[in-house]
Length: 91
Image 1 (cartoon, rainbow, N blue to C red):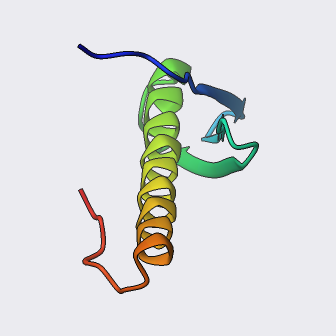
Image 2 (image 1 turned 30 degrees about the vertical axis):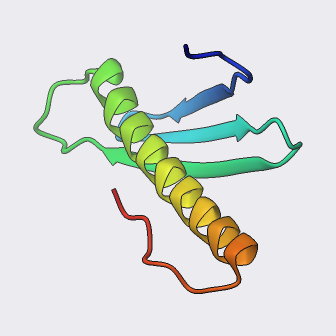
């Protein structure tokens, strides 16, 4: 039987102008730590102005960076607890 013991809240905020979108991502972990990341998207001048697409690209890049930081954090915690160097968590 599976039990849910914690929940994470991820926040995404966007800043946009006519050519660029910037996403800021934040996750607050149950231990009080926060992990932050950023992602960017640029619109070529010949592309249609579609702010949602820029948000999706910038947001995905920010979340991808957030995921990589969490994998690195977990890897470091595994090594610290085990006292040895383990294989990096990449996927």
